[in-house]
Image (cartoon, rainbow, N blue to C red; front, side, top):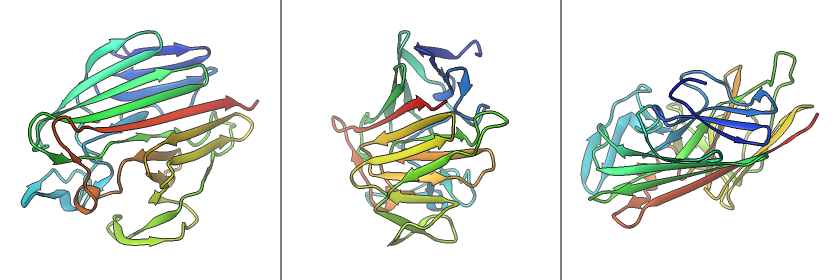
Length: 264
């Protein structure tokens, strides 16, 4: 564990968080890393938007804002995933972090994260607040789960039952049409109006259930070493197509949980 990382511990589970980036650096269950480790991996928060924003352009209240196109030609995954966070609270099983919304995001505000670890589960909470003006916002999480747990492990199997799939255009953004879910591989957004529920099973090793009352999930399983199951409060480019407005006293709140059991 790096010097600036903080660890939560419960039973044989360990959750390591890096306040310098706001990321979960590791989830270790019974001595096994469940997340891909490394500077860009682990599990990172997405706010004040999730996924791709078309051409980095935000249209809101009659104004146009240009955000950095860090996934050409789009802007991607918000602004808080690699900035330092203040440690608000830390105990052996709980952690709270906070960070201001900063440039290039054009509206003042604040994001908080809370982490609670149990022996067989982890709970995550994120809040996006406005300091002054109203603005559209999204919140979500981007975990990079390891495809295999160990060199001899079998590939993870992902099971979920979405109500629909957002049809993806050539620019990798929803084109406005909803279709019946297609088989993978995926870099796609799905609607789950009753809440996100997805089961990841590493045969003979571990089962982990991702749950959230959020209604959208992006599944990204194209990389050879990782699988991502990303609960989020809206679809890609949703700040423009389906905005959820945050105002002083009216924050955006998001929750997610992971629950696991060892199979061997």
